[in-house]
Image 1 (cartoon, rainbow, N blue to C red):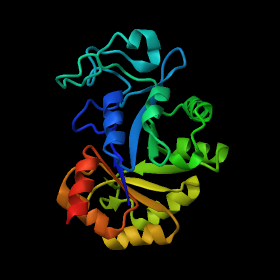
Image 2: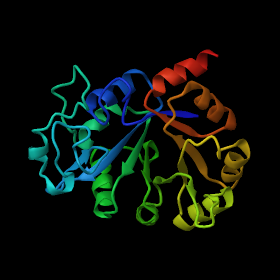
Image 3: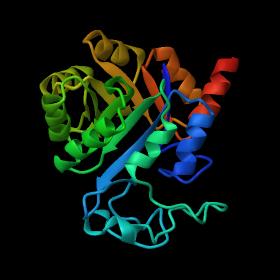
Length: 248
């Protein structure tokens, strides 16, 4: 099972910043996760929201802003001691990936241009395909990514919702069908223990799909997911949870 640092080790450093990714590597988690957007001048940058208001010193819409202007912001997410932190280029974060770890990269919007921009950056840095997993909530992005780059891995991001019939979805069968239609390698699903039970995980994995969960910060919950045999747990405090579970 893999421990993935959510937006880097974001429990202790500002999310999606170089200090958070550096901590992830220093603490030797199995991998790290980030979110990418294209700027108005075509730079691939790392930030969760499309607008910088929540994590930065002021509000700017990333897709409407040039990279140089975004560099005028402080991206410390109100964490003391990180007042000089900026929104990083995706290429800058690769220095903290290493040769053995995995990078979960979420394409946040519905723009197919981000797919090719991401692959161009990975190819330029000579990152092996097996080290990167593209994740997205957008079904069309997952499907297009696998059609263009079938040798690369992609997981469909999703969560449980109430259907029009008043039942919770997706069931394991519904999820398997959707993953098959998308050509996805698996699912990265919200960590809802009311619905994720061993039978659910086993059924999806038996159909040939990877099963990852996000975002787990509670030790007891992490222990339950690990016992179910999930393939990866994404956490804001991945290193601490991994150490705690390894001790017991």
